[in-house]
Length: 80
Image 1 (cartoon, one colour):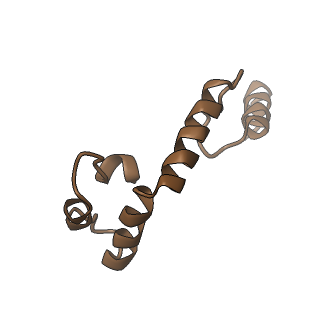
Image 2: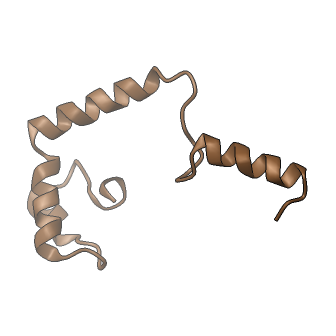
């Protein structure tokens, strides 16, 4: 949600004004204020750097690798 609706180049007030319909205004304001804190920016940068070191990044959505493997086996044996 942050990447879609929050713009680093806008002011806090402008970002708060662009609140998505599915989010409560006060919650959106709190998130916008949180996203500009130095602590959040450091945590975000650390996470981004950490993900670059992954040997096998997870790009399977909400389903785990194990569940995908089970699904492949079931399809191989035509079990529905």
